[in-house]
Length: 422
Ligand code: 3BY
Ligand code: FES
Image 1 (cartoon, rainbow, N blue to C red):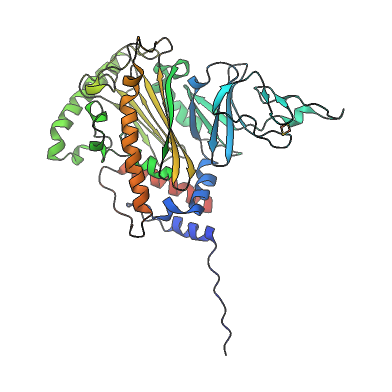
Image 2 (cartoon, protein in one colour):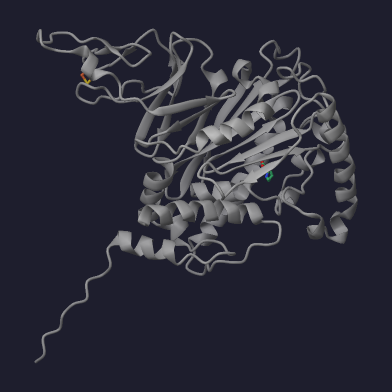
């Protein structure tokens, strides 16, 4: 009898390596990218623990001691405004025996006091007090562990890596002049809510990156031209009248921005940078002002230094987890955080001018109606895609001509995973 040598099954990480190496461009990802625990762990490690992640509007923490906590996989991070009014970020872990420090999603503190044995940290992270320590105990050795943080014109990003990608500064330099007039850092939070998505975080992002499905957003498209990422050659006879209206509105918007001496250029660096981004100045349909039905305004007070209500939509997409709409009268900021292989959280926050008064300058339901409806519609599309991709009958399908930004997102993602393997 001949002895048979069993061929060992490849380790789970090798299976993921092969998937990543074998990714075929131009079509949707293979099912395990959305369904495998091993890929999910890889995403947390390579994407969410190494890149700049958008986590909050600075307006959520206006005063010293105001904080939010952010869960990124197994990490919890405290984002807090210190006494010098700088935004700081720390691991939400006590330096004594590791207790979680702040369990709430947001709040305000004088000091950060551990609930276990009351080690007390300043909002600058320094350990100020720990009872019953020997004379040799040096508090300076037990500050909270910092997390990289940047406040870009009122948008707060963190990076959990030891070495954060350098690229952020160059991107911030491009974005800052476009964002500055809106004074997001001084804005008021009108509303924020978390939506539980029944889909892998990448499906939420991919859905955001195309308007091929925008007929599914009847409320949104009375104001928003459903032509995002469409080029002239992508315009079918059905879309021609809409496109003609879009071209006229875009010309009018360019004149308005030029009259105010503001930057006009769009930027598309979605998969050509580590901090991949796209900035677009989009005109709006109808009245051309904001996201009320037919492009009407939703708030009487204009943002920051903005002087013209017909200021269009400054649309910003960032890899890997965020997008933004800045209008003359409000801003909406979105972040996606993974919660399991097949679930994620979409956080949406609406900002208005700090002097805008609810019930006087804006009606909260009217302010939030379009994106609540759009988020719900997208939620159903994402859940349906998660179900389909989990079906043994799923095979990847080709991207259309107007899904370049989905492809760019996936390329950015696969590039990060390939770099990590190398
Ligand atoms: O939020 C966005 O960026 C839009 C909305 C619809 C599709 N997407 C391109
Ligand atoms: Fe925080 Fe003991 S674990 S004080």
